[in-house]
Length: 244
Image (cartoon, rainbow, N blue to C red; front, side, top):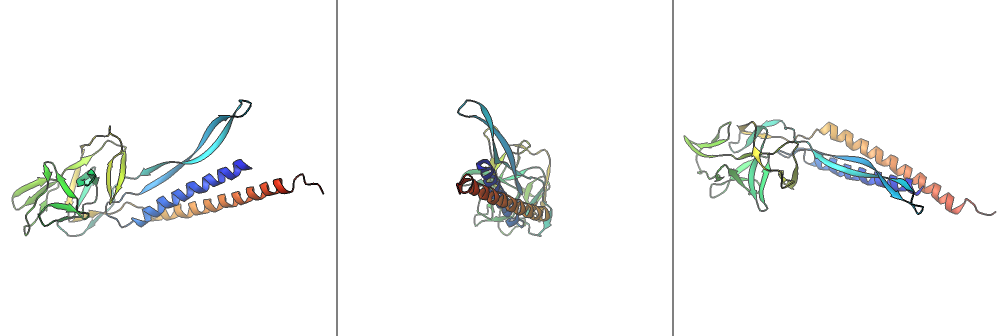
């Protein structure tokens, strides 16, 4: 009975974590370049020994991993010349307070000094440094990432990629960083930059709503199982063996 209470509690805890993950996806359904994530749980069989040194199995339900879906979102036309979208593989490289970060969010702007920046104020990197532009001049970006003003090439966007499957950590504001030190940046195997477009979130609204409902129903089932186990334990402690 104690094991049943323990398993029901673990199941409820894991489902709460899954609900948090789904809620985060739904909250970012309109966030440019956001990639949805999913929580996967697994039952572990932990072998331990009792007082007679005989092994027995202790089952545990734990969240196994959070997997990020890096598939491309649909492109949304904005007409803003400083909005860029990547078709294909790769990330924009930006300089954050914590070092280089990587993002699919191409909603850029120009600061007072003419540097191309993100909405958070992080400078966008080129293959040779920061991208400095002139105000009051039209900006044009070629499909292979060259930033042009008139006939002059100002810079080339640094489109960075990593080996797949990606091992990246979220840093916030749709920015990622490599998870492991042995996960070096590599050249993108193929991309095209589209000016005047932004990549929408890849959150599948229907799937996430369905998973949220299923997780809630499973949570209710675990809650009923916990209640039943508790009632059985109460009877075993307070009624079984009582002398009338």
